[in-house]
Length: 218
Image 1: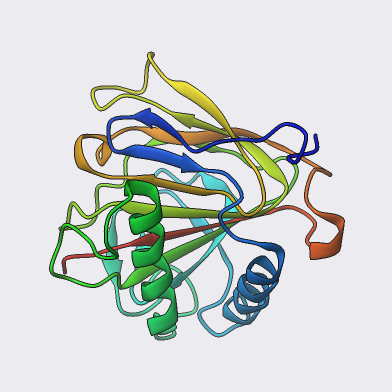
Image 2 (image 1 turned 90 degrees about the horizontal axis):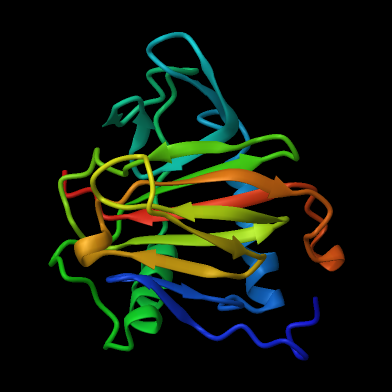
């Protein structure tokens, strides 16, 4: 679909949950993709996350600032190669602040005095998905910032009470921004499917990358 013919305006999906289509232009997407490729290299690189019950997540993940594992954070890759987690760059924190300002139409900043300090970068191949879950391992209620690169996906944004309905399905494309904070910060959300082959040809990415930026409060 040509976004020039069919514009996608920003939309509030739920109170405090805002979708801003096409927020990252093509040069910004290429720069972020290049950074993701560097972060994915070992040590402390891209890994498959295994849940306590033994099952493996279908996405692969690399962390910055603090290392996420089910269900907590550490300074080393405790469920992988044991290396120190890669640092969270200041420019990524500034990008998060700009994203919150764009989504909420307010001066750059966060409801917290603490800066953005952690990132989870998830790679989805054509069969990967993410079950409905909450981002509940942080000690801060600052908004979560989500950036998409590559293939489109169906992003399911649910309610704050359970994994059941009601929920809203949103198509996230390369360059899209999604921010959720305030009353929607504890909402369940997930990715029931990706849409292979839908990413921008010029980006040079097969699959989907989701960069999630958070304030740990730790």
